[in-house]
Image 1 (cartoon, rainbow, N blue to C red):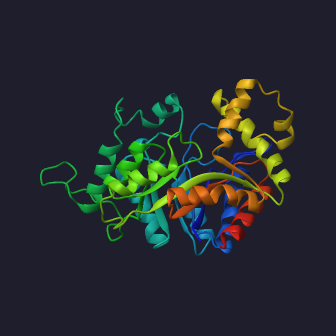
Image 2 (cartoon, rainbow, N blue to C red; image 1 turned 120 degrees about the vertical axis):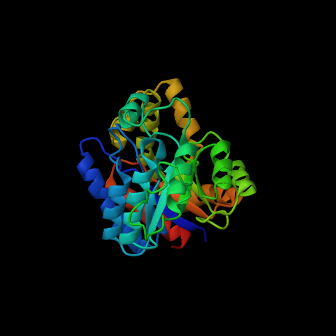
Image 3 (cartoon, one colour; image 1 turned 180 degrees about the horizontal axis):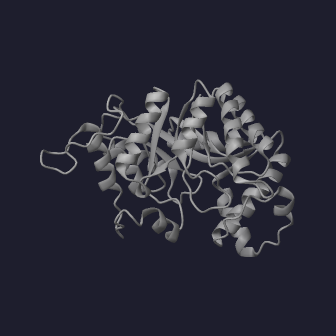
Length: 333
C-alpha cells in the first residue's frame, strides 16, 4: 500500500486561539506517530488568522521531540523569505538532534500576501524577479563548500559542519515546479489540493526530467491532497462544510479562522460562491473511508505517487484526529 503522511497547517478554529492550534498539532503528531504515518510536515504561512504555522523549524523540533519514529519536516520552508545560510544551519541543528528523521521541504512562494512578503524580506535586497534558483544554488554551495577561492562566502561554513543537510524536497503545483524538482535532483511534493495543473502530468514531467543528486539518487513523488473522512458520508459532508466556506472566504481575501459546520451550512452562498465550492470539491476527497478511497485510489494510480500526504482543514480537532485514524486504517498503516 502507498505510504501515508500528514501535512499540518495548524488550523485555527473560530472561538479558539493560535496557541491552541499549535498544541493541537503536537497532539495530532503524537497520534500519527503511534498510527504508523511515514512523515509529518508543517507549513510556513504568515499573516493568516486561520493558520498558526508560521515557524516550521521551531515546530519541527517540538514535534520530533514529542515523537520517536516518523520523519518530521517542512512543507515547506518558503526559501524567498530566508537567507540560505540560516536555513542550512537551522536544519543542520535539527538533523544533529534528530538524526535521519528530518526533511527539508522547500517552497518557491512566500506563503503570504505581497505586503507581508515585503515585511519579511525588506532587509534582504528584494528583487521583483523569482530568485528561488539563486537561493537554492547558494544553499547547495554552502553545503558542498563549492564557492571558488576569492568568493566572499568561500570561508563561510554552515554549522554544525559535521552534519549533512537533511533530504531535500521541492514543493510545487505547476509544470515548472515539477521539472525544476527533477532537474535539481530533489524529491517532489505536488500540491494537488490547490493546483490547477493536472497531477498526473506533473508527476510524469518530474520523473522524465529527474537527474540524480547528493540528496536523492532516484525520483520520489509525494501527492499532497485534501481529505475529510468520517464514519459515514453524511458526517463527513457536514465536517467539509467548513472547508467550503473557507474556500469562499479565501477567494475574497478573507483569511478568517475556520468556521463551525453549523455556521458554514447556514452561510448565504451566492451562485459564484457555489461554483467555487464545486470546483474545489473536484480536488477534495470527502466521505467514509470507503468513499474516500474510491476517489483516492484512481488518483494514486494515475500519478504513480510513491506517497500520499494528506491535509485536513476542519473545525473540530477531535474530528480531525478521527479523520486521520480512519485513513490510517484504510491505507493499512
